[in-house]
Figure 1 (cartoon, rainbow, N blue to C red):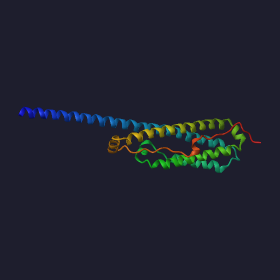
Figure 2 (cartoon, one colour):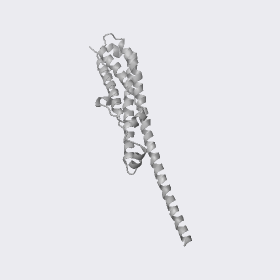
Figure 3 (cartoon, helix red, strand yellow):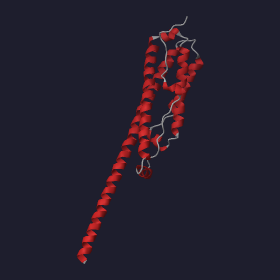
Length: 208
């Protein structure tokens, strides 16, 4: 009788160990998958930040070049300068983004305001053929346009990555583990319709 009980205990213990190993493997695999998609979002956001910073770095040189034209609208330049200052003050790294997704709205507003100010600058530039012909200005505009295009590309990649992340953490039973481990929703980086196009300047045009 004792031998039967001993055998039964061993079987039960073995089953419990197997179940524990299965559960451990499941939780480990799910956690690692969550970490992977979370890090993918962080990396994608870092690329967005890199391109936004490149735009920030180009603007001071652009402003200085435009300042050389005395008749250039001062109000338009000041709008760009102020928008850049506001965008510089409104920073958001991956950790802040994960902890407080609501901060994205403030960040987007500052970046969108800067984009709008740059677009207005490009419209005004059309009235200054000498400025458009300036080699330094043309070089800066080529760099800025390329940067705007890269911002659009990286923004889309980031949003695609967030979509994959969101699908992962919402799937059952992963959603249960994600909630227990603190993997919350990550915000999308949306932009106004006009921000989907980089500022354009037709350097071939000339005023009559």
